[in-house]
Every structure is written in structure tokens, then in C-alpha cells.
Image (tube, rainbow, N blue to C red; front, side, top):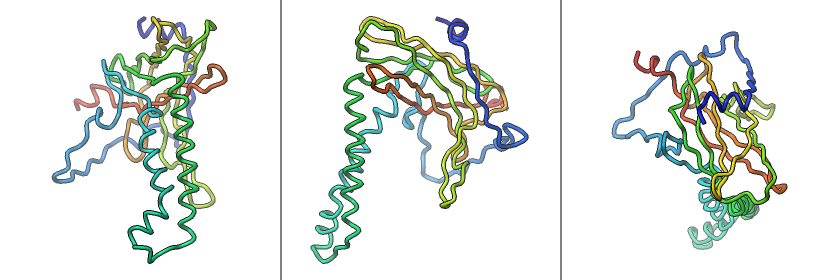
Length: 244
């Protein structure tokens, strides 16, 4: 199925959050600070999906780190006791196991969902870019049991880092621009796939750390279980912009 056919079958809904008179005013330039001896990581090493290459969702790749961090906090009192040879102890160290249990429980819940539905993979058809198109295929490796049809929401969103300031001096990210589609999950052998295609207008920010980042999100339910998956997207400027 071509990108045009996909768009015709799944109408696009666009959401824009304006925080300035001009939509892309703050990304008219890029700052690059070279660090001697430090080789920049490739998009594949950073976990970005690519053309013709299957990439696991963040919910699959992040679970191991979550287990390690949770285990560290769970064993924090024992680690401090061993390092200090029993000469140091503080009651606040007992908070470590509580955070560790919470993180391990969250990781186990994610693993349970992944075991039920299997890893979810994404492959892009073309390099996504501002002023161009982002299209690809999402594949569930385990069958979604049942004969009923399943509709999911696929959303491509640009987020502004630390855009919302809270009263307690903390901040959180805000959705800057987004577009979404309601798409029917299609059978392909024993697997299920989702085809998507989005038009990205000109004038939007590109991936510009630490200001903006893009994410592709899949939302839906099956058997009262969430199918949520997400991927960081390598949204760049158009080829004409890069050549200047």
C-alpha cells in the first residue's frame, strides 16, 4: 500500500500547540559543540528507527535498564554497608528498597505485556523529514488472538523539552505539534501489522537536543490490555535544507 492510499483510508487529525507568534522561530539554527576525541553516535546506536531496518519499541529496549536500576535501589542498604564495612548507616537508605520494589514491579508489568503480545517492531519506508513525509509499518510478532477487528491510534508528535513550569520549580515536556490516524490492524500470516503515513508540514522543529524531540506512539487495547508502544523518531529538515 502506498503512502497516498494509506492516508486516504486513514484520515489525519492534526493538533498544534502554539507557544509563540511564529511556529518554528526557535529552531532557525543549530548549535554544534565539538568535543575532541568523542565520536558522535549514529542513529542506529541511539535507537532511532531507520529505512529497511526493524527497530524494537522503547518499551522493549528499556526494560533491562529499569531492572538494573531497580535492583540497585533494592540492594542499596547492603551496598552501602559493604562499601563502608558497616561503619555507616542512615535511615534514609531504607527508602532505596521501596523505590527499587516500585521500579521492579513496573518492569515486571511491562515484561508481562511484552510476553503476551510479543516485541513490537517498526520499519520506516523513507527518511522522515520536516516538509516531507513519515511512513512505515509496525509489526506485532505475536498473534493478537481473536477474530475481532482491532483499531489502533498511531500518533506522530513533536515535544518541547521542559516547556511547562510547575510551582515546585520542576518542569515537564509539552506537546508542540502532533498528527494522528485511526488505523485498522491487518493480519499478515500469523502476525498483525499497522501501516501508517503522515504528512509533516514545513516550519516545524527538527530533533534539536535539548529543545525538541519527536516520537511515534501507538495506542490501543486488546483483551483489556494496553498495546501502547513508542519510538523516538529521527525527524530532520528536508534534503534541500541540509544541502544549504
